[in-house]
Length: 196
View 1 (cartoon, rainbow, N blue to C red):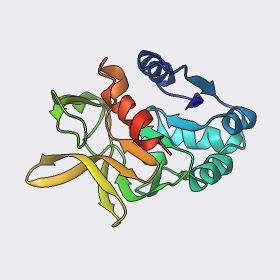
View 2: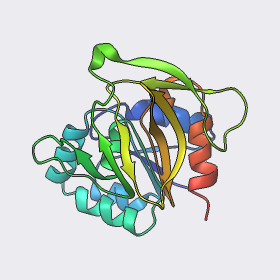
View 3: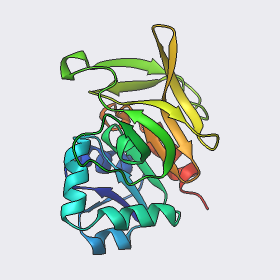
């Protein structure tokens, strides 16, 4: 399987390393021909507004959206979660998404960079020790449709917020598993979301 990592901006190199540790050679993608050549796509963390604007500027936004609609397995982490959402609460000016998951997300839901944090998470279908969630100016899922499966959530002030979801062949996490050295979330994507 050819797995691409969108390399317009963000922590794409860390996803390449995580894929390699899972036995998959990832490919950095940033052109139409690159994206047309991959079987699956990871959209990394970074600045969702910047990634969105660059994707439009390079003529990639519609292509990525169409490939997701056509069933290309896709995983978005942090900014990537925002970009695979159906809609964004308080989007930046002219910010658009690729779509793929019937959810509404809130950008920077946990606060600014200085309020970034880590915590252990239970992740549905992944056994063993908890998954370490690294949240950096992270979004959360504000609402979602009936076809969305919640894989992990956290509770803040008595309110539960999904932080990992899946809808069909699209998965998203509000956190950065690529920064922890624990590749079980990537393995879940490769073995479960990508399987035919």
